[in-house]
Structure formats: structure tokens, C-alpha cells
Length: 474
Ligand code: AMP
Ligand code: ZN
Image (cartoon, rainbow, N blue to C red):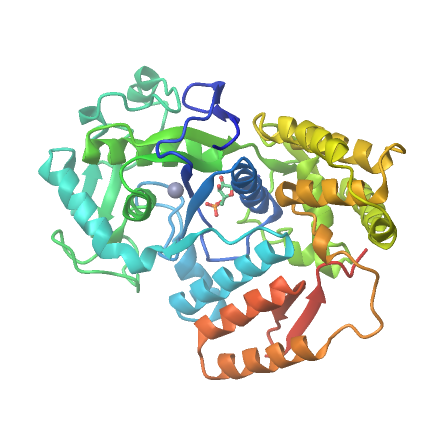
């Protein structure tokens, strides 16, 4: 029987006790990366939040089925056919095929996740591999009278769905009177959105598919509803993303899904607040985006960034600067040194079961209360500093906490003289061969095996491979 967990639900705007739809199980869907460039540190905050949520639910005793999409179709900056198709732009910029671009940035994204100890979701699904499912979804909506064709495109008619705007609490009156400026003359209502494009300003769009409405490509909300339903069924427990997704992407996902199935789709909507630079927004479209590799290049341990993330509750805006990261790195180094010391001293002691249980209880009370990670860190430091606890009990307690915190306690050890042992060298050789044979699945599997040993591999533009240990840079 899982322990009780309380979570903030954007839909109800309150922290409610979590009730799973299926006993002992959690089905959660998280909006994944758009892979036309590297993910920035703000994006990584969203994935860190989802990882801590996943780990917390597992700690509470649930079996978690976590699905995440990869948006590898051309991504527009708005619902209408305006803005840039970023995938196409990247392909032009880098003189590569669109699918090559998508694969490159998808790999980079999962390398970043590995460096931050973010567990891979149970299922990762790519938009380009589910286009027929999306077409079937749109057909269903059209058959039920929720979609209309105008100017060659298929639109969702938001006026047909009773309750449009309830998640985001949109002021539809004001939207009707033109507050949300929209230049698409085909829409019947300002909030309507495209389900399928056939008429596009992107004549050279490479990723196009045949459909009942003509050759084209999907709108940007349909993939999440489609893949979520395909892998998790018609009712899901939790749907996550950043707060920017609430008013458009998630509202649209929700309404088209509920229109199709005729009942409630998601029980708990959860959103992380933004990570911003001290002087403003962190955006992927600005040229000089900060990413995990930037931190590694500057000599930071990526887990210091994970530590920083944990210091602020996910529903509060978090600020980033290198001075702030310096403090997190110092705290992480301190933590690491304490773990090394505990690992040396623990074998001479026995774990005190009662004290261990008490510490676990205090820690769980924090994370089970809407993921209060900052308070959980306080419990962790109190435990590490507690002179009444012996090293074996402290180490057992922190190992338990690390199931949620993911600060790499098991991998932490003193620097070894020879950094690459025979096993790692062998795996690297095999990965090189797999890459040369273009066997990407095998290469990815070997990357995961290296990650399990505590190593991150980075493929350099010159074809060489750089190897980093997760605990090296402190
Ligand atoms: P995108 O690739 O733009 O769809 O973003 C991926 C995820 O990162 C989404 O869940 C966004 O809501 C989230 N996100 C984008 N920018 C930030 C930011 N500065 N801080 C936190 N989360 C963000
Ligand atoms: Zn989504």
C-alpha cells in the first residue's frame, strides 16, 4: 500500500491528496523537448522537476509509468502558420537533414539528462513515428463535429467544447474582443487551433505526410494528446510541463482529448515555474543559451546544478547566475566530502534501525508534501551534522534520501589514479564500432551502460569521444 502524497493541481489550484486511478500505479505524461537545438538550463529545470516527481512517487511505493514525447517535427512558434519552423532553420543553418538534426539534439538532450542524473522515462516516443495515430485522432474529432476545415487546414473548434479555458482560467470574453491578437483569418474563434496543416508558408517543408485532408503535417498540440492516449490510455493521473504551457498548449491538449473521449482525461495537472537569469528570461532562441555543457566546460559538476534546483520549490521562480551556482557547487562539494568520509567510517558501525526510520520519516514528510525539496535538504543536512547518529546510520539514511534527490551518493568516491578502467574502455570501443555501423540503438544502449558506471560520453564534432565522470569535477 503506497504512502500518502499531496500534490498541487493547477486545475483545482490547491494541494490535494493524490488518488491514483489504478491502485498502486501512476500514469504520468510529460511534454518533452523540441529537438532543433540544445535544451537550455531552464528547460532542464522542467525535466529535473519531473524526475523528482517520478522518484518521489516511486519512493512512496507506486509503480510509475512515465511517458515523454520528443518533438521532432517542424515546430512553429504559434498555432497559426506564422513564426519560424525551427527544425527547418536548424537544418539550413547546419547543412543537415531535418531528421539528422532531430537525432543530434535528441542525443544531446539525453546526455544532459544523464549528466543531471535524470532517469529516462519509461517510454520515450517521437512525433514522426506516430503521425498515423495523430491523423486518426483528428479524424475522430472531425467525425464528432469538433473540427472544421478552412483554408486547407483542419482546426479545432473551441466553441464546441464546453469548458474551454477552465484549466488556464482564460478570460474568454476578453479574448473574443480581440485581446489575443491572431492573424489567421481561417479561425472561427480566436482560441481555435490547427490540428493539421496542409496549407503552409513552408513550401520546402520536408517532413510531410499524406492525410485525408491532403499532404501536410500535424499542429503542435495533437502529438501529446495522441501519444499520451496511445501509451497510457484514456485516463491519466498526472500531466506535467512548465507554466508557459498552461494557457495554450495544455489547455488545447486537454480540450481536444476530452472532446475525443467524452470524459475527463487528466486528474492532476502539474507545472514547474521558470528558471530565469538574474536579469531576465532564459530563452532557447537567443544565440548564447546556457546549457549543461556550458557548466561542464566551465568546470562545474552538473550535479551542483541539480543541487541548486533542489534548493527552490518547483512552484517558485528560480534565479540563475554563476555566483548562485558557485554557492551550490560549494555546498555540493561539502556534501560529497561528507559522503566520502561516511563511506570510510561506516563499516565500523551498525545501522540503528529506529534512528534511521525516524530520519526517513522526516525526509519523506517533506517530499510527500508537494515535493518540498528545499525542506528535504534541511533534513538531509541535519542528519549529516547530527552528532547523535553514527556514520553507518547516516550513510543508510542519505542513501535512502538519494533515491529522490539523485545527488549520486552511490557513485561518490575518492578520485582514482586511473580514471578509465578496462570495462569502460571496452564499452567505448564497442560504442565506436556501433556508431560506425550506424547502429544507433546499440550505441545508445552502451551509453546507458556507461552512465550506470558513472560516466557520461560526449560526441565531439570532430568524431572523437570525450569521457567525463559524474563525480570528477568537484
Ligand atoms: P520547449 O522545448 O520549449 O517545449 O520546453 C521544454 C520544457 O521546458 C517545457 O516543459 C517548458 O515549459 C519548459 N521551460 C521552458 N523554458 C523554461 C524555463 N526558463 N524554466 C523552466 N522551464 C522552462
Ligand atoms: Zn505537450
